[in-house]
Structure formats: C-alpha cells, structure tokens
Image (tube, rainbow, N blue to C red):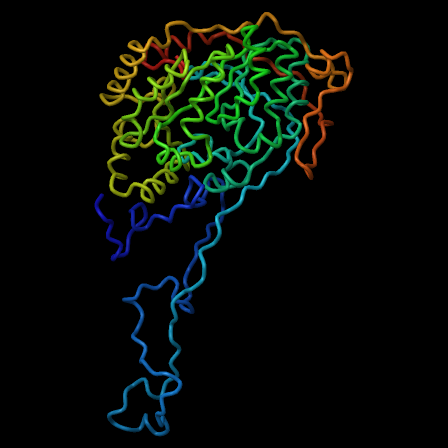
Length: 471
C-alpha cells in the first residue's frame, strides 16, 4: 500500500485531513447533523505547539538557564543578535494524551407508541418495532444513523455511544396489538437499529417482546448481526413450531480484521455462522443477508459468505448495496480516508457508478440494489451462487391466523410461569437506575396498513429489476 504524504496542508475529504480512527468505534468523529444551527471548530490560539507544524515555528536559541551571559547593554552592541533583549518563550512539544474514546451511555425513554409502518416496495414487511435508538455495533455504513439527528445528537459517534432504550417497549407493544380492530401482520424486530446489540444483555427488551409474540401467537421476523440471538433459542424454537418466525442474520464479511473495522462491536463472523447453525438445528428458519455490499471493500466475499452460510444451514439469502443517505456520506468518506486511504476515491467513484452518478439514490426500486452494469454484475453473481448452492428454493410464509389478542398488561402471565400453574406477571428487568413506567397515554386507534397494495408495489419493483430486501 502506498504511503500517504502528510507533509502538505490538505483540504476536506483528503486522506491527510481525515480524523484518526478510534479503537472499538466505527465513526471517526461526530459530524454536524442537518438540524444543527450552530457550528463549532477547534482553533489553536498559538499558546501551545499542539497544532503547529515544525515549519511554522521559529527556531529557539539553544540557551540554558545556567549559561552566564551578561545581557546588560547587550542590545546596544552592534553585533548583538536581535533576540538578545527579548524574553524568549519556547514552544514546547505537546505531551498531553489524546482524549479517551467515548464510553457508551444509555438513557431510558417512555415510548408513546412502538410500532412503525411503511409502504416501501423494497421492504418485505409493513410493520416494524425497534426497542432501542442508536446502535453500539458502530457499523459505519448504517443507513439508520441520520435518525439520531431528530434527538439532537450527531449521527457519528453519538449514534453508537449515546443510546436510548425504550424501557416500556413490551408494555407499549402489548397496548398497540390489543386495540380493537387490530389486524396482525408480521412484525419485523430490528429494522433500524439492532435489537440484539450489546445492551440487550442487560435490558432484555427484545426477549420480552418475543415472550409477548409467543403469548399472542403473533408472526415476526428478526434482522440482526449479533450471535446474542441464540440466547433466546427457547422462544424462537417455540415460535418456529407454529410458523411464526424467521431470523435473518446479516454477514458482511468473513474476515475478522475487516469485520472489526466495519462493525467494531458486532459479533465476529464465525460467531454469526455458529448462531445460524444453532438456530437451524433447533428448527428455526434462518436467512442470511450479505448486506451491504461495498465495492473494493467486501464485494469479493459474496460467494464465500453464501457458501459458508449454506453449510451452516441457512435456507434463504439476499443482498443489498451500500446506501449513503444524509450524513452517512460524510461519515463513510472520513472512515475510508482513515482506514483505506489507498482506495478511498476508487470506492466512492464505484458507488457513484452504482447510483447514477450520485453518492446516494433514494428512489424505490433501485435504492437497495443500484443501477448500471456493476449492479447487473452483482445481480448475476448472486443469482449464480444461490442457484448452485440451492438457496431460495422455498420461501416460508408466516401464519397470521393464529393471533390471539393479549390479556391486559396487569393480568399477563409469563409463558413459563403460566405453564407451571402460577399467576405471577411477566417481569422484564431493566438495569439499576433506569427510570421508566408503563403509565403512558396512547393516542386513539390509528389505521393499520395491511397488505393492500403491496402486491402492486412489489410488482413495480420487480419490473425495475429490483426485488425486495429478502427476496
């Protein structure tokens, strides 16, 4: 790899101007978000040599305090140097330590509602739920990063360090699916942020929702890149027996070093494959997402990922091309310049080839797969690989006819305590110090977006040559 020359001042977007990478974090800085009204920048005031190159510092005379020089009247001598009568303040090298990497903080939140609905033809589900805001996995390419701007946080480091847990997620979900006239449709858990990110070990909100799904026989899908999903194997296996769940595991690369750079706090690739193997052995249907495909970063691993996923027991597979909406464009460019300065511009130009000359294409039908000859090449490679491996031959349909409206929040019993004949209510403990309750007023019943019109939207996407996210 060619060595980057840092000897000249660099402009924004060049490798020399890129911030240094932080260990265990995906983003390299906190970028300004689109709702921010003020802008702040660090400026060196000249009192420290921390930000001044050596070329800009005048040479300081090599004089120690012990040197016996009679400075009295020295300035009056003709051959005396100009600095003799002046007080010399040497600029010392900056010995301060670099700031410590930001630590993860979690704030509890009372959610007024938990279900979100969409009508996108690129996504195979109408309803989704996200128990957390922000994601500690730190995937630099995450399309959900700009959602942190609505909270006044940066989509950069704030997105992966300043997290929000919807502490009443289970109670809010119970209230919404209990409304009169509710029509069940498969709920996707983890559409924006990963429901099995590391803080789920303590908060257990996702497990609480799975218990509710099993209690009510409600169909669901899960998208994750964390092997922690295998922790809930008991619930997932029980749901799978009734055709109520499909788990999709996102695997971006099989290279451990690349994974630590792309997704610093997600599960290692081999652990994700082990989770696929564990779930499949228990009868849980599993699909694998090669998502996202990044040119010259992980695009060469597509066939290898599919092969290893099939060997682990996956039955379904899909892929998406990297998306760079809003502030993600800046974050991804800084990340490229910090980690791959030798190929940064090449990667960005290929993304532009896939996006009609732009860094991002928000249009339905093309935003997931891209357009042009390079998008066609990826599509052909994926089709050939899945056909050879026998993937996507059968597609599981989830059963929506088993749904039973839940009991009231105060009367619900845990699945396992109820089986034991007890009447103890289900309890989903939160970390010590979390301030949350379930007494939140909910708005009046809102219309539910069912399956009406989805067939027509997907047909338009197929005509455009772009199938759904999990085709």
